[in-house]
Image (cartoon, rainbow, N blue to C red; front, side):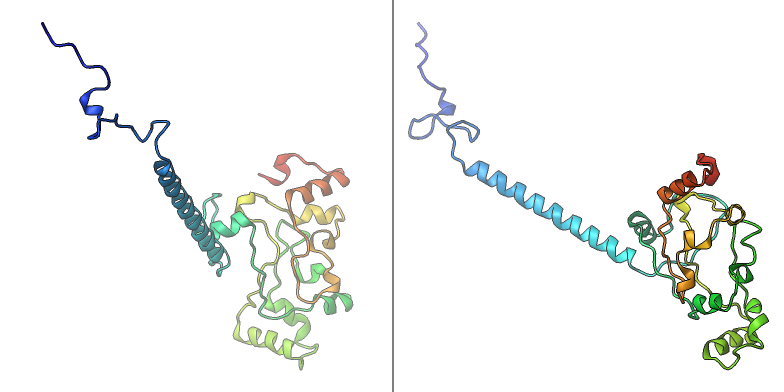
Length: 233
């Protein structure tokens, strides 16, 4: 006859003392294993936060850097040439325009100068135009020639170099907006509507945030078309 099987757990499940072995997953197991798991998870989360903070710091540093020179292209693309440019576009960071000469708009407007005297193409097409140094010298070859700022303008003219004025307003490439000044001038839209109180300023600044909402609301008030192709074409 075969011997009767012993009752109880198999030998492989017995400890040296004869007590059944217990898995760390058993309900009665010690909590040290779970504590260790929580500690590992905590360290992992801390590492994630550290990495995220480092990435954010890098993006902010890149966004605050000097913007690269603009390269014109006839092909629309939402892509960016550098990480810094992408970061600035994402966070809406636009550097303040630093002009080579602090042109005093207030002084010229007080002398009854019109916007179209300098921005000659504003009534003719999409671009208002930045005045050439030759335009400045039409008046300042005779007027206020002893003033320090006028001497700077004259120096550019004598060297045959255009004054490198920096653009203050303008839509980003990603906005895919084609703004046309001429129809707005024909509709008697005041320059200050989009450019702010230029007559009260010296150096031009970005006074108005030209968002899509701003343009749409203005079109509604003036009963102008708000069709997408009005601006996006």
